[in-house]
Amino acid sequence: MVQGLSRPSKPRPVLSRTTTPAVDDVRPSATRAQVRPHGTKRHEDEPVVNYIKRTLCAADGRDAGLGPLASESLHRSIIASQPLESLLPPLTSSNAIDLQLYALIAVILDNFVHTWYGRITNDRQFTSEIVRIIAHCVQGVEERLQRLDLIAVLFDELPALIMEHIDAVRIAKNSLGGYGPLPTPSDVRTRYLALNPHVALSPVPSTETLERDQQSNEAAWALLLANRILPLLLPAGDLSNPCLDVLVTEIFADMVIRDGLCGKASEPWLLWEGVTKAITSSRRHKSHSTPAPSPQSAVENLIRGQPTTQATGFEARWHLVVFAFWSFVQAVTTAIQLFRTLTTTITQAATLPARTQYTPVMKEHLPNTDEANRRPIISMSMWTCGSRLLALEQRMPWLTGLLSLLHWFGISGPGRVCEYDSRLDRLLTSTLAKTLHRPATWLPSSLALVRTSLFPQNQPAPPRASIPTPSEAIELRAECARTIIDALPHAARRVIFATTDLRDMQRDLERDVLDLIGDKYLNKHLLVRIVDLLAVRLFPEIGREWL
Image (tube, rainbow, N blue to C red; front, side, top):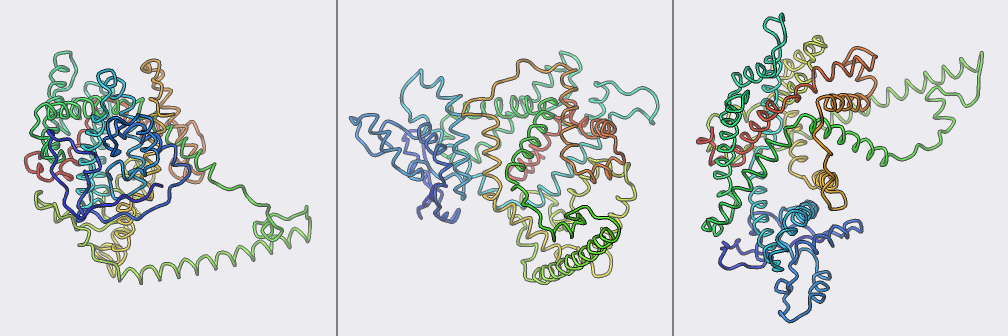
């Protein structure tokens, strides 16, 4: 891990396009974030750091403090000897996140910008300008994330939106009254649009003319979103440059939103393939990180009911008695330990801060948010969303009824132990807040996984030979279902699917879960609504007008 980046106490300057400073001048002010602690560079990060320096750090000597007559090799050697924090501005308040973000930025610029810009000129200051703008935007997003109620957005509002999408898809795909032929794909899209209308995806693209109209509305929505968000992120000086404004707006609206989000990211086969690769990679990483089991001792064998030698008659009964005794001792010890841990945790939860500490400070721009922010953790939509996704109400109504009864006892029963701002509610809130507001513990590994998956060996992943045919897409869906089933514990399989037949499990999973993302147009609806929600929450200045 590279060392922490220092932050000057002076406020961040307003940069203009007429005078291009070095990227080191772009520093967040001391009031925006605390100074990051110094860390020790890990050996495995050195290749990543060297690649970032070669790609993002200017090689003309101006950023290194050298004269124009110095050789390029001398410039390279000086840059290689300097720490990364003296060459690039900090992006976030986490050193590890900055390293992975800069690695991802370096790969993108190296493969998609330098390939054509290097044919025009050898001036590398263009890269410094891009890094400066990206740093300014990322710092602004991080500042807004720190002021956002992430718990309410990620665990209540976003699952509620996904739940509405699931219900609308299932309603649209069902035949009227459960009888008659199933609706056609065009009928499903028309029904869904009637349930969840959106201007960007209207009308339903059933003909070429309607498809052109829908694409036009989608382009207008993406451009409008970019025009609302970018002025809140870009430096003030860059807004006065119409050429830069148009260029950045078109890139964000066309490449990021339309081609990326509404294009490739909404393909069903790509989503199925992505889920398969993610689960496979996670299981492979877990198997590599799990240590080999140590040889079992005779006592451990006795506890597990496994005699060291073959025993019959009296010896077999003796081993059974020993196994029962140690199992009883183990169960009692575990119960006592759990009781002590639970009692200590609930007692210490009384000293935790109230839920009002996590209330967002940007809600004044949005109407009717007080009631949503006063929901206890166990009443948030994330629990219902998981049940709705797995169709537990149809599969195991007894389980959903039992959970609803326990929920009622926690909220309205004796003591109201799980109501808003109770001890358990504070404990759950504190646990979730620590995880969300400390992304350095989980985000760097996720960014590294994304980078190595999309750009193995710092090169774009080889594209597919062609778009999968319908039969190939069905096979990808079946492979995704098999991967998910293999990742589930055997006990969970039997409880969820109420069968031991793997074919029945696969068929139910494909029909009830994976088929929910089987239509690109419906996937667009979900992604567009998620973008709208995150845009309004991150940029509440546009909330009233956008809603």
